[in-house]
Image (tube, rainbow, N blue to C red; front, side):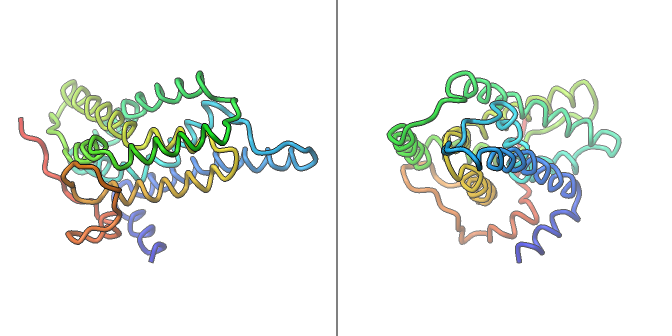
Length: 241
């Protein structure tokens, strides 16, 4: 079933490029880890040491963002003239990446290369679980469902798309940033944890809005099958002026 979903995603609009970008990002993540494991096979070291800093952070973003942004990219694809599609998408991606780049720089400056202790990882996990259940995080998820009105031509189109990308990046940073920082600090199995986070975040991203309150996150909705949402992103109503 998952194979059919991936094929249908790839055959619609920019889906092929999104899947290729995600695959390339995962390649950049996995290859250094494999090479590091081979290099350390003859030594007595344990775990990893945040091997590539910002390179690993950007590879993580490239691996995880394309599928999460399926609706936004499809919206830009549908709402722009063919000659303007790729420039609008590129503007959106650049501005979307800026908040993530700021968070990655803060992470690399503060904790990259530092071996996290078990107590620090446990405290981080408790804080992450609290944030996952918080109403503020649900508000951010709800805000992601709003799509803006875009002006048809430059420079208005560029400004609107840049603002759309920045806003979406800031919201996604708030929603998934803490889990990404925590996963990057794991001494072992960080790639498997990041893969699980990507799958859960992608499913959660396409679920309907919920009333913000303290409760665990959910991955099932009676209103709409979430697997179908991954194939055909819901047409969220555009904001009115």
